[in-house]
Image 1 (cartoon, rainbow, N blue to C red):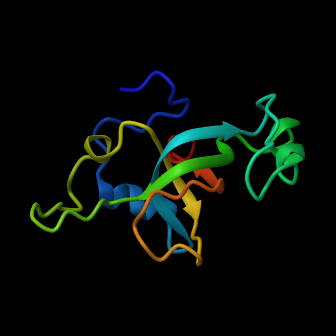
Image 2 (cartoon, rainbow, N blue to C red; image 1 turned 90 degrees about the vertical axis):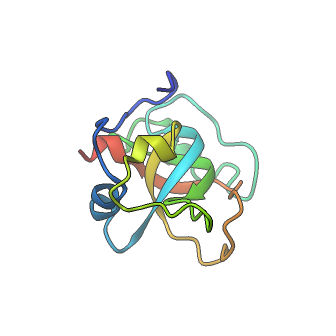
Length: 125
């Protein structure tokens, strides 16, 4: 696993179980970077510069809530190799697995660079 992951998920959790935890309103995502509530961090880049630093940096947020960046949707759709929902989630993502607010502006499957409000899946299980 990745030592940077603060809220790891159980090693036997499947993609389906993870999707169920996120529910209908959130997108299961794999994110390279995470800034959690309570981190002494200033968000000073991108469209959200300054707006979320108060929420995220002051420690007033709930455990596992944060701003996640460089996220891609899970399960990753690989046309040639069918990925079953029974697959272990940690095989698809070694970074931060999170339930993210669905972003209507991103309809493609490219990496989303903008910080998205997410909650670490590991903090929900």
